[in-house]
Amino acid sequence: MNFGVVGTNFITDQFLHAAKENPAFTLTAVYSRTEDRAKEYARMHGAARPYWNFEAFCASPDIDAVYVASPNARHFEQTIALLKHKKHVLCEKPIATNALELQAMLDQAAASGRVVAEAIRPLYSPHLRILKEKAAQISPIRLANIQFCQYSSRYDMFKQGLPTNTFDPSLSNGALMDLGVYCVYLAVLLFGEPSDIQASAITLPNGIDIAGCAHFVYPGFIACVQYSKSSQGYVKSEIQGEKGSILFDRPSVIKGIEIASKEERIVLPDLFAEWMDMRYEIEAFLQFIKADGGAGQYGTVSEANQSSLAVMRTLDKIRAQCGIHFAADSSFHIATPKTTPKERES
Image (cartoon, rainbow, N blue to C red; front, side, top):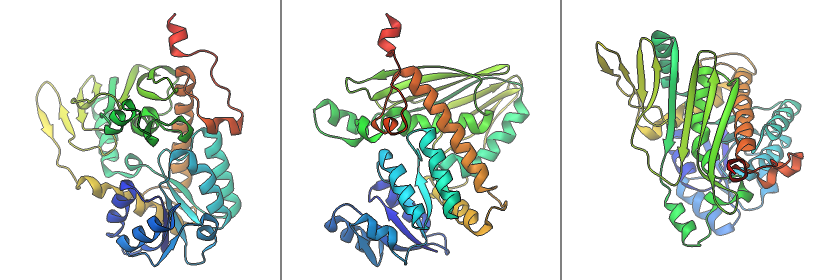
């Protein structure tokens, strides 16, 4: 299948590195906003056709599917345009700014007869199946702590007054949308949508969040998700049940799984090098296209889309409680919450 890519950053580099392992993947086109960068990136990765005009890229007859890795706020408009031009779309996480955007994307995919799916590593990882299996063995679950705290070098840039996309609310960025989304995804995939949420965040003067935490309430247990781009975490995530605990490394990659109980502690072998886990989202996406709605190793695209919707609804609720508003919300008339966290504290 002939692929194009939107975005020429490090995550696209990793994606293309993993894609080389799949014989069904052929990179034919690259889009960047500038001619020089488009040509340079196409040359770096062996793509025959560089584009710096997005409409021309969308209309290209040489592209069957597109991997979108542009800034978050661009995902919606670019994915809609590609779907209207009959391209399948694999969009980097978070697939949209809010649930209403995502629903519109799914509606357009149905109208165009094309597949749209979110590129989010845990959803397709074989380690997710291991976590589900082990969680059932230690049940009933009582507590879970899923954390992804990673100090960002771009935070230093922001404090120096230098421009950076990472902390720009006009691009639908911030700690929740960059790192917290992995924590939320894993909680929803393992336990479903919570019945109640209690969330707080630390925000910058421009309204963007740099760290936060949310308690998810489930029947009989509580899960806590923690995320930060302004501090570094050094402990593993943990799921505690009455019959034992499961520990694992950061939820974006799900490695280093350990099973602990009063009797023993078992370390499970890792299945892949870190960057290689992107191969599974590529395999899943190609399966979704080939299956034409049917189920395969990775289930159905409808099931994947429903997971994405559940996560996006949860993210919306967290943002509403924390007073985090993005410019893209205005397009769907999503109101800014009436109170900020600071106002609620007072």
